[in-house]
Length: 253
Image 1 (cartoon, one colour):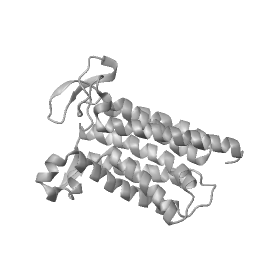
Image 2 (tube, rainbow, N blue to C red):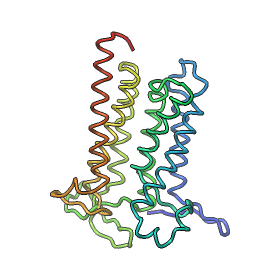
Image 3 (spheres, rainbow, N blue to C red):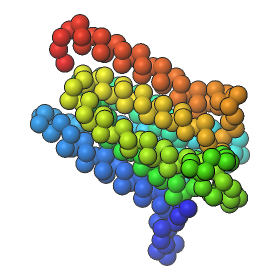
Image 4 (tube, one colour):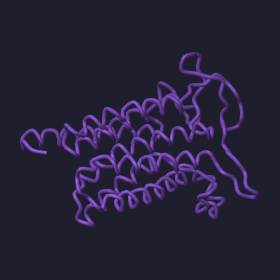
């Protein structure tokens, strides 16, 4: 684990922050090149708006999940530099922001969603990398050697654990070329909801291997994060089926 990359006086360069920043920049670069043949000058404003509210949602989700701690230290809620972000909070807030922006600015949801889908995959992938460098989202103890390594938990206790961060990173990057390929064949909104479906399935799968949450094979759905993943999978599957059926009946993109 490499939580701190360097120090400049009283300033610390955190690996989590850098990994996320690189993922965002690469995601924006991919979005700029993806569908570049389609004239659209407002996509960057959309991306910035969605990222800002996803960031707020990520912090709100983390605070809500650790409310016992923050209830006694309310001044730390707004101290974003201390870290603490929630994947589910970011995902839900980002989806709401994208929908709200399309309504407010009267922009086609499908076009923005399709352009940002590959970028979202990159940001999530680098989120897994950030967790690997920071040591968060660590795996549960296991005896499955190929998927495990001698890794610490958040208290520095080493054990043979699932390499959850690297598994999440690898699976997420694996779907990127597939989504790029589908992006030229499927309707725009279908590509977006299929992206959400795959990301949620990956997060649910890796979530069953994590050691930083109370999970077991008999109580996987008792964990709030896993329940949210299941909900996103069901929602995305329904909307995906609807979009594909609508495209088939309409005979147009």
